[in-house]
Image (tube, rainbow, N blue to C red):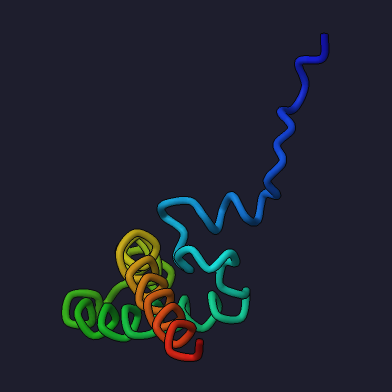
Length: 103
């Protein structure tokens, strides 16, 4: 009896796209890597700009590496867990709406 990998009839890409947390919705394909790059940049750039402005008064004398460490400790989790998922959800809603209107 082979207890190796489970075999399924649904390709991995379709399982990911149809999962409840999939940002592209039920269109069958997740956003392209290019869309994810743009969405990630749209999340990171404003967070870094605002973060640098916010910590500037208290971090004037800090070493640049320490300043970067503190900034990324806040920006990365905020982007990954809050901003990027919301932007991808918005992209998925826009994509569904444009797909529905073009039918």
